[in-house]
Image (cartoon, rainbow, N blue to C red; front, side, top):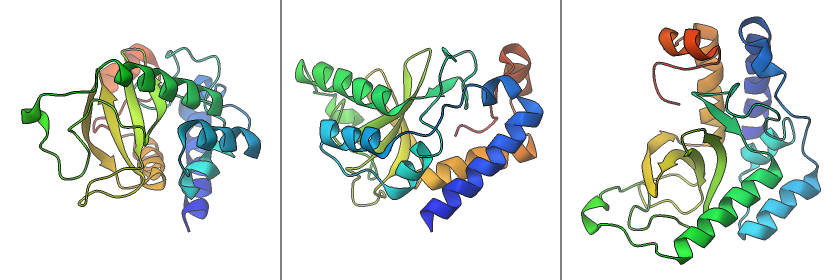
Length: 196
């Protein structure tokens, strides 16, 4: 069950943050209200995956981090309101021009023939404008709800097949301390050797 997996992953993440990165733990927001999550769906015209809804019902993103205490590799989790605003910003940018170089359209998992797709839901952001995105319009070899990064109008590769998988990856790396130790020492937040 995706919800059970998400709740178990959050239990592990919270425990590990408490022991290793308590300042990051303090930024995890209180649960979102169901109405706030419904608002994302109305604004973006999508149905959010069950695992992502469960995560927002646990923590409505992060607050007061300002990219200084990001949960993963310098990225802060958006609140429900932040998700909708970030999505609207990309929609406006795409309206001004959404074409890409056809030679960049090589993925069989992600729609790389556009700079932005209205069924991409940005849920986390770094200070260098790299977004983590839930893909609700995958290509045939992709998975509905897969996670990828998006920077400067270009999607990266698939990081996880679902939000639950992505969150479990963070939990596993926190437990195993699979860190980029230089970055952790510099920023005192979780930076992992493998990108998640």
